[in-house]
Image (cartoon, rainbow, N blue to C red; front, side, top):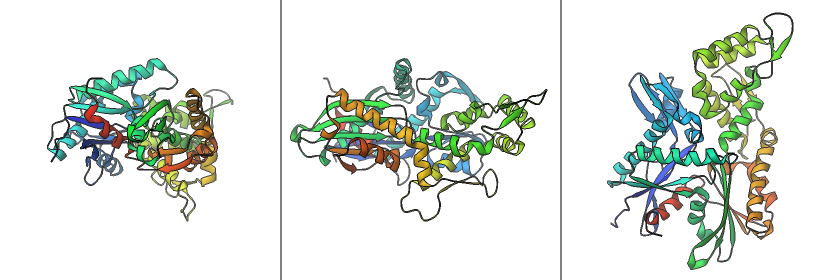
Length: 423
């Protein structure tokens, strides 16, 4: 068997992660869970057994009601002040640099156990922009992620933009001379790479661009529009004195609809504040649902219900009316989510994503009609509202759908053996 490079390719994603390497120019993906090449980017800190559980097992622990703390979408915290804030977990103070490092160390451990190879260096994917509206945060995110890799046990790490890795993996779906556009819609960001297929010479990257909008933002938008009103968002709260009212504060609902912020809601102060809202609420039954969510720590259960409703509404073969099932909160509580309603809710976000792709072609001095192929990667690229917006923006481009969840890691694995070679 050919020697395996000591550089591990890692796709650390907002929703899912993967690892791989290359043998004789062929990408090999590592089974980071039994029979699976992707691992949900999730951790569960088990308070009873004092251990950390990863991936699908972490989600199972949450659903089973185990005592502990569930975390997901931590990639979205990179570059923010929250990365350096510490929390008590399993009786120890830990910041999110250490938490992300634990997850990356677990990927390293599983990759080494699966291959029998020691991986001392990493080639990691990264979004084009972690924070598209804040260059300072964007730069800090790369500093944070580098520190996480070092803490995880890698002696060195290099980074490759995720859509450029996907372009490398999908070069063979284009004919020589074709102009391709990678449409990478992940959990936290939307990234684009414009590239030309050059036959035996490989590919030529023309330009890349990114936007901090992804699948978890779709979840938040759907939750805010269709679920949070059932928990009291927008309802009126009476003043302590007099008959005047004011709307319930919006912040708690926004945080509850945001995957990475849910763990921060279960504080004594937040619970007390919500109890006070329910006490003076005009529609107390709605706010009492919010009280139950915080008391029973049901935030992630609701987020999973919204995500499941989104997937059902995006299924063109669905026979039943898609809905968000909130039985975990109240028996029989269902929120209808037909496909047309979901598309209307997400239309503005989808258009913003398409506009970013148009700006990329303009930046490269390429007309949209010159793009010959759209290559969709990333789990959220499967959304019909995204497909429709991109087809309108690039009407002459054929569409290719490859391995949505593994295109990036395929490209990273191909690039890994050369990542640390001298320029």
